[in-house]
Image (cartoon, rainbow, N blue to C red; front, side):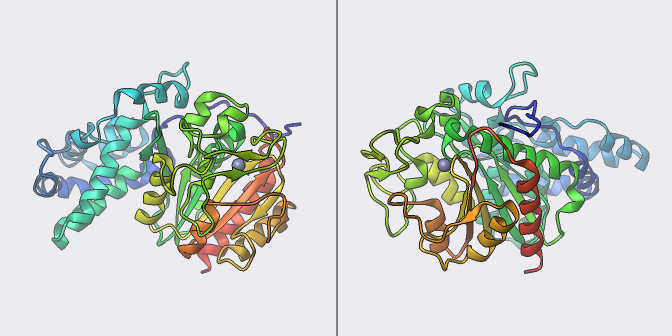
Length: 387
Ligand SMILES: [Zn+2]
């Protein structure tokens, strides 16, 4: 049974909340001074950007042209994503197949805009930072990128073109990612859990230590989410088990799982690992995200088994965090998986990269077990903040 309140949301973009507005207020002042420079730099660094980012420049200009009072008023008023983010840049225009993402990721009732248009500019600007060689320009662009990342952005797209969206709270040097639904709709409650965790920490951003940046990625496998909630919804649109498609030492083309679970009565899946490691756009997006954002630790949520794991076999860099989560949740820590053969797993790839990966299996495919999991998230943040 589900003893947790069912959230009313589906996965959708939301306007910046309290902490966002505070930062936008602060950054707004800086942006006001720098807006002209940013626009100029963007034109210099991003050759195909033919226009400066009008919303940011416009809002910044409005701020400078008026006194402090209107700035405060503007900060407390609802800020739509389009006010924070400029129009999509041509390099990351959503593909025609991206349209279904709006259906899946946004609630029909509120008719929110699809994620892709708001997400694209963030990544483009962030990418521009990497190619920029001028310190002054880099500083300007980093400031801009930080402001923009306070809204949902896209780490990549699925086989069918749906956005894999992320959002960040905090600007600290230690980077934690909280990720759900790599097994799609089959483990849809993990998407809800991560979304609810984002909403909670967004409303209580003072609970996130200044040492931390926390990224939330509710739906790692959005095509699986779109399929429904049965075992067919566990794979991506190529029929690949994304949690068997990573380039770990033990990757294999055919894959294995719990008999009677998503792997059915045989417990095996032909080509479940994909034709090769990182063959899938979703795992490629995760790879770029983990590497590009210099993620230090990952909490990856699954459901249906009740366990906490890290590097299979034990002794990995994520093991102490995994044991901490296991103690708080009461889910057992399992050092060596014996139920079936594991291959190409996200956690093992993370360990190879010296990233502390912890995989948490919720007790079933409905409950969020909210109190325990929230408590363990807070504990992990505290541990990471203490270094
Ligand atoms: Zn799973």
